[in-house]
Image 1 (cartoon, chains in turn red, cyan):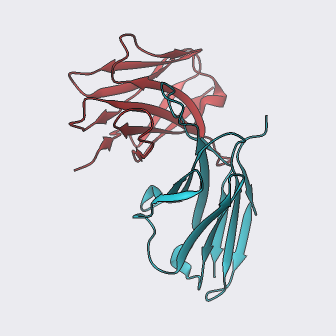
Image 2 (spheres, chains in turn blue, red):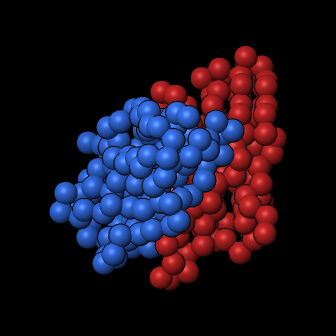
Length: 116
Length: 116
């Protein structure tokens, strides 16, 4: 079974609109962490945002926020006021176990294209 | 601060040749990871080290692959002999395992390997 599922292979959004990238996960461990990374066409992997399973509030980092719905096992990334530079692949990843367990499992990614 | 450094950035070699990829983690990080990214298989963890000791090499595809970490600031991933199916982007990442931290992994720019 897939540990991390990203159901949107590609998304097209108009500049300045908000966009939600879906991520669902599967784990029976009560302690886990969820990460989002951005991979632009240049190829590097850029860390965006982190959510711990015990965090009471949704994580936010600038224009990025994580819509964490624990009961549904979803951790969707929300990008507000999208910009042309947001066009990239976006990967959701999960660490099972408490911080320090280290091993990440990645989803297949969503390719986001921002149209002017 | 410098991020994760990888060399070379691009490598083109012929089947049967030995390939060595190099990585310098972020200073102070105690975990180092090697990943491989292909279109077909996505991002896969090959091996990771903690304090220079290999912890999990279950992702290493076969005996042709080997990785070492002789000290805290240097690691190599070697493929001998290389095959066309090894063509991929190889990422190195590092993280810090301080208790209570998020153990976010920070990625290097990657090495794009082409085996002809």
